[in-house]
Image: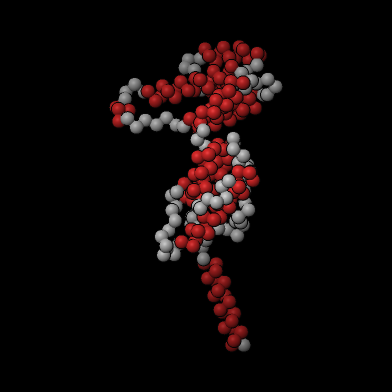
Length: 235
């Protein structure tokens, strides 16, 4: 009976200790029981031309897993005698496996010998993410050709916004490093942003069907001009 009581006490103590162990989900080295090398990141496979959407989808998935540091270089490999070295290697291999599982097989074969997730991500971005001119040409050509036709307003706006978003990623944000911008009193940045918004508005209404001609006139007569989003809501 005494032995039984001791065993019960030890078992209860072990259970209590296990319940008291809190999983640190903020630990970049944490891997859940559901994580495995064959997992696909995001909702699509990389086949080359879809790099913009693919990279965005992959970053969101890795962000949710707290693993972005392995591809952006912010979580570098620990020194040789670090207690975190093996954990880093294990996680880095896992992230590489996730990345290659998220590519078309033909593309995967050309990146299989990458030595780290950061190197793999950099190589993929260099190959598919920096050829701006051809892709910008294709996106602008697509934008010009979009017409409402049989689409409703929501579908038509969504199609245009998808191209605008891709162009925004490719063309980047306006960044001014000149110290003179700090003293600027002419609101140059606002004027540039307003000009871009006006360009979107005109692109949007140009593709609308003929029954909207009177609405187009009303929108262009407004002072100040509405944003493209406000024009969408009006329509």
